[in-house]
Image (cartoon, rainbow over all chains, first blue to last red):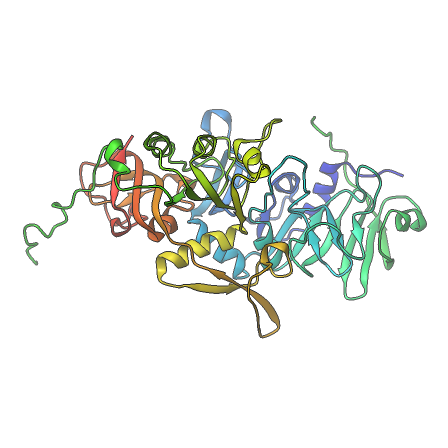
Length: 226
Length: 230
């Protein structure tokens, strides 16, 4: 078995982004998708703080404290970029103008329910940010996450145990072990690393079906910078 | 060409004040908007002035109660805040933030709102809309106790407008009539917060000598009551 590392999962998610899409990448791991887009793909990256057309990260000598994305990263603008205020930015999200969002998650249910906003961290306050808006209103909601928790418990479930971010919203989940679609019939495995179907099912908290054309999940070697 | 009448060319309007005058009239129990998101647009000089002025029992309406570059935490640490309406309240350091320690001890109230609903509630407050329905939050803890209504095939949550007493807004350039231009992503909540407050105070890098040109104005001075260059 060769489970993908987290950047390889990000790479895999990036391969499904198509030319000319308007894309919002969640804070944390998903923003790295922009590093792995297919070379022929040109997308508009929207950041919920109002930047429409996020460019690459700024070099240290060109960084500006006021030119940041929603994750506080100092960025550049792509040609033709614009900046709007927060209410317009979220009207854009809520109004269905974002083609794809890729979000991190703690749990996804077989009906597409998503839990990604509050881990109930002891001694910590809650944080929701724009997660609910993106999950409820982007036209296509995809998730990147580890297939199981650090303790080995499944994250793909019949029903989420953690507080929900949005109901019935996720279309596809990329994990270190598989690419899984959420369908009216539940989870359907499109790609999986070289483990047995029984092993994958044992790490999953809801029934899996396997697409007839189920492929091997592979990714180029990408070093994790620690 | 029309001759502009004297006194009606905007030159007689002057909203410039100093930091001490900027917060005149702010008292205990006020609802205060504070701009800033993702590291851009924090009115930190005004926040510090508010701490020094010292009103208590404030309700803060701010995107994050814990952002490391915003001085919001100083108001909280100074026990001037009764309630926070925000989208993020998680600290970044090993030790809990001033907000988190007070929240866990039951000394401060928290109303957590999804960010798009947060900004739209403020926009509504400044636009004369008392409430609206949004699909965001339906089926989640944050919609508990809120009216739900079905339109077509989808369920929506009713969110009520937020208005307030004071908005602290960071911008880049102002003119003396209160027109504002923002730098990059500094704009964020500035326009909506200024519109929803009885008194909107802008903290700016500079006040231009001349009135700003139409192309540069991102927030009309109609929404801005006081301007402070810092």
